[in-house]
Length: 159
Image 1: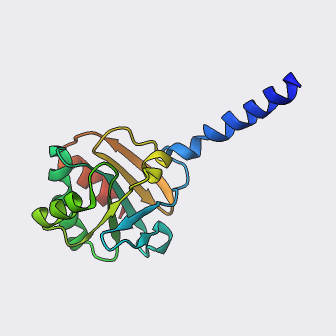
Image 2: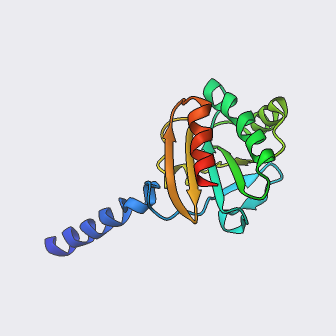
């Protein structure tokens, strides 16, 4: 009986800590489980862009709030080449809507991850965390505040 229980626990923990489930660089991108401000489910797999960027943000994170408008302009300058998904799992929908309006975001998908499923799948523990995906593979994972020029040069290199 002990062997059966031990075997079950081993299989369970191996499944829970699968490397792909934490969104490591080089692994396949994971489908997001978040909704837009209209309550519609948004899927990465529906994106036609070859380059996708996930930005995990929250209210009160000044770095996040500086990065989002720059990404919005970058998307505008590179139409049909890149899509940015700004994902918030901490603030209310109303707060997220106000942030998007105040920042004038028009080219970035603003999403709510109410159940924190996408954040958990990608192993997000701090904001901002920016994940760059090309050809459905995670190419870069940028944690914390970085100079915009660094982020921009990485994005340009993947276009």
